[in-house]
Image (tube, rainbow, N blue to C red):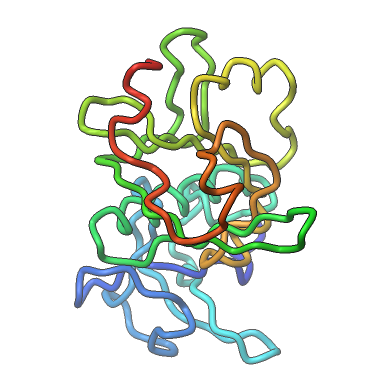
Length: 217
């Protein structure tokens, strides 16, 4: 089986209890310093450098990581991107990591927005109560209502039927390869029903207020 490629950019720093990005991690640490973000795996990671000098996390050799979403990304990029986003959003909601920037292509050019997402928890494989439609990631408020839905595109993009089922919610779609390559910026490939402030000003508004969509659920 192929080894983990140079795409694991975040891990848990066991000493601090916080997430750390690979380019800020200690090169070639011993076991017990960094841990995999896949909760089903939670095994030790080491830090290596590519031929271009870029650092990345990978599992230790013979680390029995076959069940990990990050071990063979060629077979599981969609799930790996889901787990990375779920962890990053959860940590950002706890104010322990920055909220990822959102990058939009618009007729006026590329626009980058820092969203202020007010949510309580992050849920993978969330199901819409009305349609039963499954969504890759949902940021929910304390009442369990969705504040923002996130779809991860790897082999199947959001089609017309799914778009119709999501009309009651704010949602974005990102590509798995983009997420695994750069977690600092979310390149929005598709979206709908976003608040008008986003389209009008492209500035740092409080875009996603807790409970705004409670009446839609």
